[in-house]
Length: 620
Image (cartoon, rainbow, N blue to C red; front, side, top):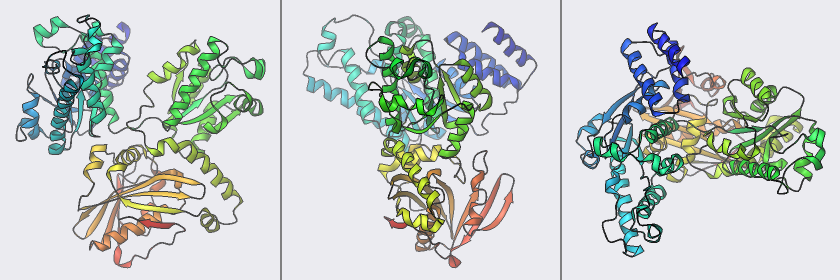
């Protein structure tokens, strides 16, 4: 810390823009409250000196922090995490323990601030059962549910008035021996009552509420170490500084996650990663996997965790320096293997550089290479991938297989905001895509191929059930995405049933299987025109005429509503080059072209529906 800190201070003295890169890295590496607090003070000095932060967002995030505690220095550290990562923020700080009034007075200062994100830390002192410890389970359960409902009701009021996402802190559990064995036998004790309230909040929270799981953080950190009675009595701090450090980091993580998606592909090595030993040297009978030894059992547990990732929608792939014929043997013949060949959407066992294998996988799967995570036990292989495909996130496994699953569980790269039906089916969808590619290779022409697929599409308006998948697709689609406008689940929800918006989702299936929800169009009615705010599509269905079917339906709906034209815009990014001429290909006329945008228009009076091989079923 000392050497790097001196480097940061030197960059600060020289007013160097490199200051921000160093500060960000050191913030990520910080492990203590005092470290973070010191870095925060340097950040504030840099801001006061006007040191340019090139990566910082131009528009600040309006963040309100409310709670039953003294909010200093919590707000300083949350600001630091956000701003050192390029998220400038404008803060609203509630008064001590005044959050109920602030959230219910809809003409008050909180609502005038118009927050985009509200962090609420309800006072622990309010989470206590008021009756007798011996009251029946049913009576205490009603009290716990009532408190959880009241807190979620406050969040709903904030969301309905402002559209803000709400981060709601739950309650950490007592750390003292008080009540002894009775602690667990009665629902009216602080221990059980808080757990009951936390559970109810988590199970019934609407999509616009993200639970800041302080109970979990304190448990992970250590209950006694999390408490700070002196800090509470002297300055109304809600926890020890060491836990505050963890809470602030978690708040930033949740905020970053509002418009980000987890990684999509986990690429695995084989030898000493999925099993112990080297297949080429030890043979099928000699590798360690299974319940016959502690080490073999650890590898089996690691494989079980990997399967659970697959069930959550993470795609699995293999990149291994091995002979392919030998490499597939354990998956087909070893009785203790948990993973099987059909769990993987790509399997590359060869002697090519693993970095090149991963590049090929990205191209074959139609996914951005920055959505890949590579795991290996060999530092040299990790370093090669880091150097040649720096967009890929790498994880170097530790020395003990017993820790492998824990490393992946703590990497936080695959945390889902929700698990949709499409997630559970994702591997099957990619395996079906392989069959389509085989059919395409044998087809004599593209129209005949498309006809043979027997495609059926359902185009429907946004609905409540699809909100998690809609938000997921909006936030992860990069290549076929005309504007790359991200939306939170709450923002998607706010578009449902809006009269001046046309919001369509598309599901596609064919004889090989169901693609699920693959395309989204969001258009806003503006006088005679419908302005296309968002148009995106999964790259899994490129060249299937889905975009033609969508345009036909969009034109039909716009005409039915009395509009005379569609207007579209292309906003270039580093990843959406493939749709630069999309509107031109779809028959739109160019209105204007500038380096940062291109505008197009389609007159509906002259539009003829585009031919497709898709049987479309509109449910609007």
